[in-house]
Image 1 (cartoon, helix red, strand yellow):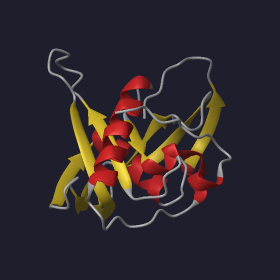
Image 2 (spheres, rainbow, N blue to C red):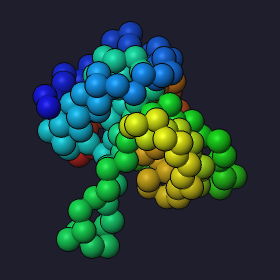
Image 3 (cartoon, rainbow, N blue to C red):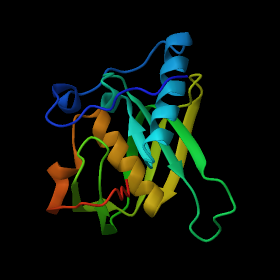
Image 4 (cartoon, rainbow, N blue to C red):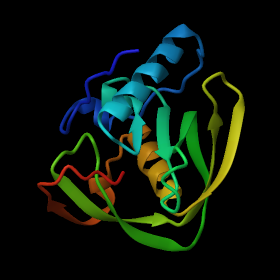
Length: 166
């Protein structure tokens, strides 16, 4: 495993719609392992392949419970992710991004979603997600579609903190 370099706006890869993954072989497995290390090194909640300059539909989300910090967070790997259902309930929350350092913004997202895709070996996945984890998935799926949270933000502000909620 080796951490990969995260690219920053205005890098053109961040604005491209990523290619669908059809080969689940060793190259994809290495990309996933490298992305996991990159996510951990940068203390992110999620990471999409375009953020490491790979235009493929691969996302990671790491989510834990705030109620019990003794339980380690769960790492989700999803290939070819897509949201197939959005709730009508919209919630506003603060988001940041490893590819847009020094900024945060208020973004409206569906509170509950259904996400479909594949696991790292090509097996179909379907998840119903609600709350913060649904926000993180929507953020990362936007990345593989060439959309940044700043495109959806109702307000954006500068921050000097290293805090990165998404």
